[in-house]
Image 1 (tube, protein in one colour):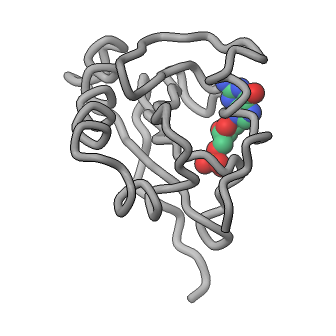
Image 2: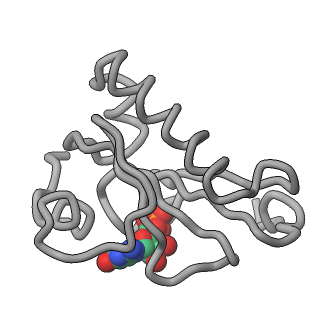
Length: 122
Ligand code: 5GP
């Protein structure tokens, strides 16, 4: 599927809509989720036009991948959630309930997050 340049995170990257930025690097931008699910809920996105981990993992350069992953770790340290723990999550596609079609890693923390996922019907 073609990348949608009108998605909300593409607009944030183009400074067409604001975000609560917490960190930026050459290839990544991190900002607070507009509807936080936990006391710390930050999204880290690559600057490149990648829809999800699927095309990022195949199409991004080594430099983009390294910078993006390092940014995730750096943001967690900046948010002060390393000692008590945090969770990262990236949804892909329909079954993953991905809402915004630009790769984003959620960083959740600031409280006990419970078990990883709720059991669902198989
Ligand atoms: P997904 O379900 O695609 O993994 O998560 C999308 C996330 O983007 C949601 O947690 C939602 O709250 C967040 N979000 C949607 N629109 C905006 C926005 O305009 N600004 C920010 N900061 N977050 C957004």
